[in-house]
Length: 95
Image 1 (cartoon, rainbow, N blue to C red):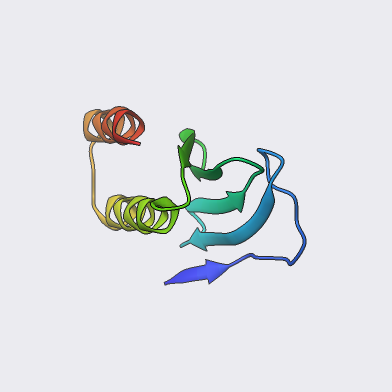
Image 2 (tube, rainbow, N blue to C red):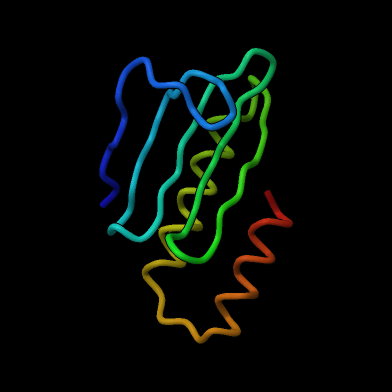
């Protein structure tokens, strides 16, 4: 289950207002922020990967939800180091 880390009024790493900030199993985190002209979705798997994706008004929530689901599914799987590297590369290329 995702845990909310959201604090109202927080400024995110891209300089926007944080709308959502969640952590999963103390292993990864994802943050959605509203910037002046776009939305930024910053996520990371602790000790392994950090990535920021950008979205518009029409698709930011769907992209955030999809990224969150993929991160959750990855954390819940047993993976080899090679599978982990492939996930990071595919995830970053996709988003």
